[in-house]
Structures are given as structure tokens and as C-alpha cells.
Amino acid sequence: MAKPFKTLRDKMKPEQRDAAEERAKKMLAEMPLQELRQARHLTQVTLARNLKVQQAAISKMENRTDMYISTLRNMIKAMGGDLEILAKFPDGCVRINQFEEIEENT
Image (cartoon, rainbow, N blue to C red):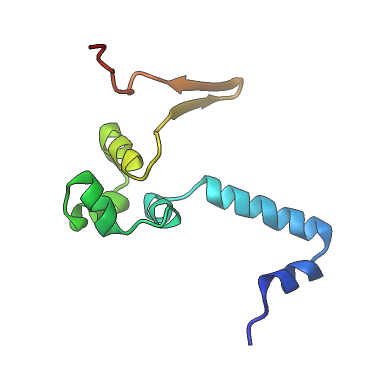
């Protein structure tokens, strides 16, 4: 019979718990699109409906290693998020803003 995770965690040394928590945070901070969609509790069908495309298009997007920034931005927006692009350098990060949508003042 499976043991509850809390029981296993309580048996761990504090440094082991800290290390496990750091690994979990890193895993949640970095993930492929498919895992991100699943973590947001969205199906491919639901996301496809939000983007007004077929479910097969979502499958193809999730398996691509190269896509337009606008496609990625639309997919992230359909999941309820915003896309930011950062350039990381040894002396700091720079947020690249040239790919943001231009809002018209009307």
C-alpha cells in the first residue's frame, strides 16, 4: 500500500527536505509547453477552442522546437499568462520589449 507523501517527508532530514523543495521549485519554474498546459489544468481541446484552432494544431505547437514569438505569445495568453523575453548576461538581465504588441490609443 502506498504511503502518504507527508509521512515520507516527515522522515526526511531537514537538509533533504530543503533540497527536494528546491528541486520542485526549479521543476515548476522550467517546463515544456505541454506540461505548462497540464499544470494550468487545460486540455488540448480547451486550449484549441480558446485559440480558435484544431486540437491537432495544439499538439504540433507543443512538440515544436521552433516557432514564431507571436504564436508562443498567443498560446501563453490563451492559458491566462503573458510572455516576457529576457536576455541573460553575466552582469544582469535585460527584458526585450520589441516583440510586445503595440496598443493603439483610440
